[in-house]
Length: 85
Image 1 (cartoon, rainbow, N blue to C red):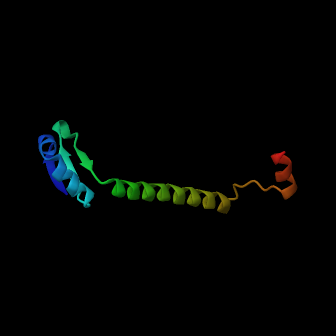
Image 2 (image 1 turned 30 degrees about the vertical axis):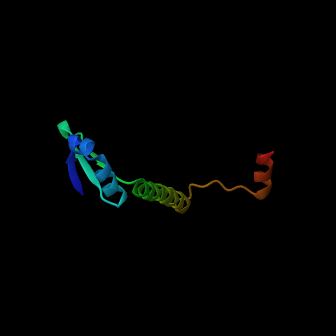
Image 3 (image 1 turned 45 degrees about the vertical axis):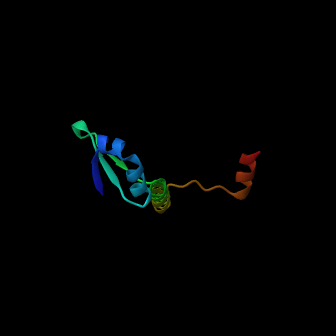
């Protein structure tokens, strides 16, 4: 990870963007520890996909826990069809 000041980013944006697009992460140091981390869109998309997958797996775990604890509602096919009307 490369650490830069805001002024460095402004002065050399083209070089920094090339680094970011090649996979480098850039930390932009700001006052009062309000730092930023810049990553490429591809890396951001991969992180978002991993986050969504983790949330989905957590939902599955909760559902399995509910089933194992008997917290389910059982309906017959006829009851489900009647509910759909």
